[in-house]
Image 1 (tube, rainbow, N blue to C red):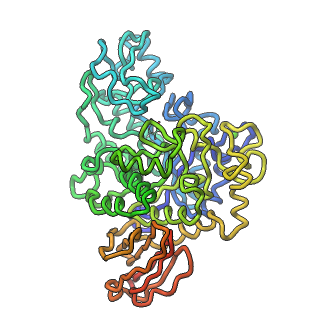
Image 2: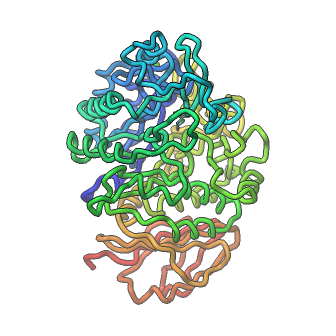
Image 3: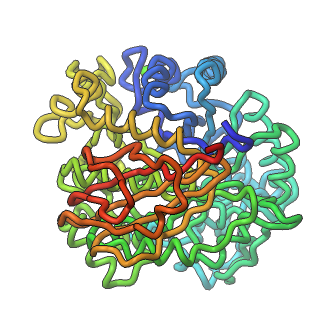
Length: 546
Ligand code: NOJ
Ligand code: CA
């Protein structure tokens, strides 16, 4: 492992409550997760991102917390959580947790106190207006499920601001007490041993909301403060932020005072996500190439986190209407597969029609593009979605472990139904079945992740598209870092292709295929590289010590 662990990691994200139940109450828990750490070790991931673990009424799947200093008792105790950290560390796995401090649950004692009286010490912890704000109906994140961003509270006799659902009142970051409290929360979890945070909704944390002013000023300095704070408490702790904003705004989130990233270490690459999906839909790599060429330059130490699927809908809002239509047509043809007029609430397996070759191609491409790959639980076995579940819950069904009752997730009635029967049911798709099959998708993911971890230049090197005339549908990129150089070929189309990369041959040393969708002829002089439909090849060009 090099200097900065997060540039050479594979992050796996899961929700404890849907991963593995250990005590037969139908709810996944920390002990259940501990019992599956060996599975994750074998898969080859080395960082876990846990969705919110705090006590919650569960109206937004935990993104509505009532106590930032505790864990949801349904998942276990703080003691169990500390055990999880210990057990994970023993296996070389770091744990980061979701930090959801843009808002609280409306049942949080702070908000309860704030609404009870104008004199409450917590009144000013939230964002209020005495009169109906002019921007009441602007800035909703969940159109269709959320009618306004300012809601009148009878008991408080005032309007409160909520960027998300009305049961998620925004904290007031203009209040120094709130700022200090958030630092304390971060420090608390660091003290327990977490390696960092996935920060929810960062643009909304730093917006200094005022009634009637829909474009609020942004306080980026607070991110610098938070960074200073955590880095002092734990030198190698990281911040991984969700900031789905216009590309030109991204660099400010990283910050570059002093020449290196001094705010957020890692940002999810939402732009890449939309473009990857578009490229897959059109079987044409252009959108990805365009983005790779125009991605803002990151300060040293800044890193992208790449993903194909996460726990939310695939957000296509940064595509043009025409591009979005192409994606909808291919991957979300039915109305109930779509969400918020901008996204798709499906897993990748069914989106790609269960086509194994295409699935491998998609994940091979994501994992080899610059940055740190994030993999969502269940994708490694090709799980499907359950469209009978409301909204984003379609893609939040329990992990499918085996042929046992409820897919081995729990003996009891599960918190959410396990997908059963048919092509995507646990009877067909589960870990046990794939464990017995060396040709399974799970076995493929294990090999792929292991190979990636032998290729650290992907995470810590530079990434460049190879500018050569290429057959249609083909993307060629390379990664160059202190350890050497890798070349990657991906064919997004169905036609077999022959790629001439003779110009690269002179600068190689003992080049060889290290991973591919099939056995190919050796690379030779690089003028006749074969690539099947949906094919991919990872070629090591050289090692730095050679
Ligand atoms: C973003 C999270 O990813 C999403 O699941 C959640 O609903 C909102 N933030 C509100 O916290
Ligand atoms: Ca349980």
